[in-house]
Image 1: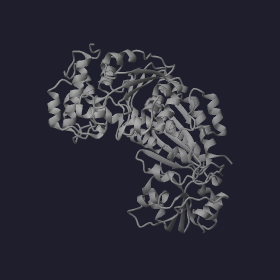
Image 2: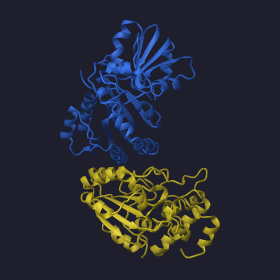
Image 3: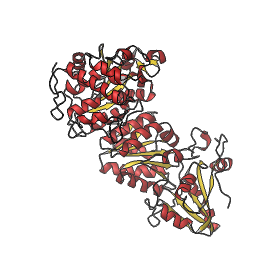
Image 4: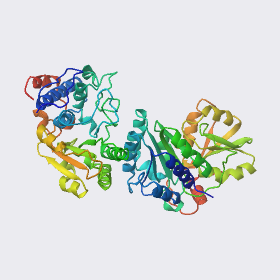
Amino acid sequence: MQCTQMSDTNGALNTGTLEEKASWIRRETLKIHARAGGTRLASSLSPVEICTALYYGWDLRFKPEEPLWEERDRIIFSKGHGTICMYPVFADLGFFNLSELENVCRSGSFLGSIPDPIIPGYETVNGSLGHGPGVGAGMALALRLKKSLSRVAVLCGEGELFEGSVWEAFMFAAHHRLGNLTVILDYNKISMLGYTEKIVTLEPLPQKLESFGWEVHTVPDGHNISDLISVLNKIPRNTSGKPLFIIAHTVKGKGVDSLERNPLCHVATVSPEEIEKLLGEKI
Amino acid sequence: MRTMRDSFLSVLHGMMKKNEKIIFITADFGAPKLDQIKNDFPDRFFNVGIAEQNMINTAAGFALEGFTVYCYAIAAFITMRCYEQIRVNLAITSQLRKINVNLVGVGAGFSYAVSGPSHHCLEDISIMSTLPNVEVFSGSDPFIAECFADYSQKKTGVKYFRFDSSPLPEIYSETLSPDLNLGFCELASGKDICVLSTGVQTGLVREKVKEMHKGHIDMFRLTDFNSEELIQVLKNYKTIHCLEESFRGHGLDSILRTALCDTNIKIVSRGCIKKYIFDLGTRDDLHKASGAYIDL
């Protein structure tokens, strides 16, 4: 599939398929980690295709030169530290210069290991989990009052579904029929200390969410960009209706074998040498 | 006598009539005047249920979209149940984005005298005043609550208003109007001893302090007050007693010591000893049990 959003400001990669774009984003994310080992790599690799689909394969409204453009769609990265892959995306789209990727976590840079709204493109303060759905629900309700057709999408990890505030927001959003709110779950099955299902049972998630009043769509392979786009295309520009929940099954550390096989990969670092080797391969 | 909350809400009702960008969110907590807001502005009144965390997060969402937001709940819960949401989505966020969110907490100190430690609110001044970008106000009468409402709309930012739950006597008026930028009012001047009080205790000791010809200062703004002016007033006294419903060393007394650190002015803490109070009785009984009183 071809990209629908083309960047001409940075000249990074403004042609090609979405799969090629995702591969470029994954490589750039690895390069960032090689330079800044404090960045969370494994959790930033699982949502690469989700972010690709959102920003390049869908009719997402944004203006890189005006990040807070009133008519933009609002994307909240609730699993903030697991979205370092957005740094190359935002740079590629022209939110900031591509050369900034060289300075992640360095003095004077605005790109830290956990992104905050000092970075053009980020809407909310990140690092503390479980906040996105509630803030997103408030935004969605506010947009309805403003008679705006802008949409709100919140990217969550399943680990933050352990936070009670998330379920307060899920009830609230369904009660107010926030059809302009979508939660996308990067369901990579692992949080810091291992498999989430072994920590506290989350399943059956689809049934739980449906019983909370959400319309639930499952993407069995959250790395298949076409499948992700098919589901994203079901999101209407409606201000009223059931809020949408997209469960995208992903692999934590996707593309890096040593991470994919490690249930403790959340805090694992990959050496610059290993990354150099990976960059020579097809990932 | 009027309550501070109803005085605040009456003014807010008038503001909501004129300003369609005002949103009111309650965590299932009411007031007689709140019914009027609920009935007259049903599309801008939201009850999130007993869910303070979600109240703050949705408020942040509204505020980021340009609305002026009022959150309303019991003081102990609007500050302590959702402290992390306040810190992340209001205090930190407001350093990067212009937001106007006003937290109205009812039940300051021992307001809910017979409800026990869960409802006593003795830590809020400490934890709210330590947050950068959050202004903290402690009201002492219904008139000042009206002034707070007016200020809250005009001044963008995050604010916490600490209100007593009981009806209180009037202290301020059109002729004795509180200066919110100054942050305090010298209700009486005297010799040697000055009682500096906040909240309900200002009204409780006012007559007695006057009779004894002591100085009396009502402190209604607990952050960003004019400390230079305050020092000028306090310099006239030998001893300053800080009377408050907070734990000693963790409330207004601590704030004052920081503000006065470059002076020789000493503050005597007349707040609560650092224990939770399970005793039942009147407000006065709880003041005696906790040590939050002064014998003049």
